[in-house]
Amino acid sequence: MLKWYLNGHKWLFFVAFCMVMFCVQSVNAQGVKQELVEAFLKDAIDMKIPDEQLIKKYMCNDLPIPKDEKARGAHEFFTQQVYRFRMMLLGQSKKITDNFGNAITAYKNLPENERNVMIEEKDEDNVFRFKGEQNLVFNILVSNGRILTFTTMNKGDRWVFLMLCA
Image (cartoon, rainbow, N blue to C red; front, side, top):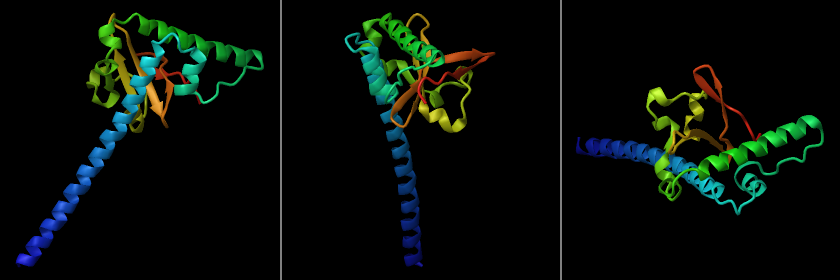
């Protein structure tokens, strides 16, 4: 009877250990993504870093050279969004820019009434909300170690991401 009791405890310990490891890996992955977002924001306010370099380092591996009018329009829109984004960040005080981590929240940790982006549930781990001063709020979508987009468009009472990099 004692042998069965000890084996049962080993099994319980094993299950508990597996659950802890699963949670730690999930938290670590979330932490790595948030660190990427923080590094991106920090570099975005450094105007010594050209837009193209910021895009290449954090977003698109290579931004294609536009060859036709449609591609030129898309390229221009993309670079305007990056510039506009950087200008909005520059309007934030040093209190925010010195510690972006305090202004960033994982989307899945937001209250339900603040979850207004149309995304699939499986992508909630990849979205971060930046909430700064002067009502500056934007969402950042991360995937595969890259910033996919920070631009959203209003669709009724919900927001959708505009993909800047494929």
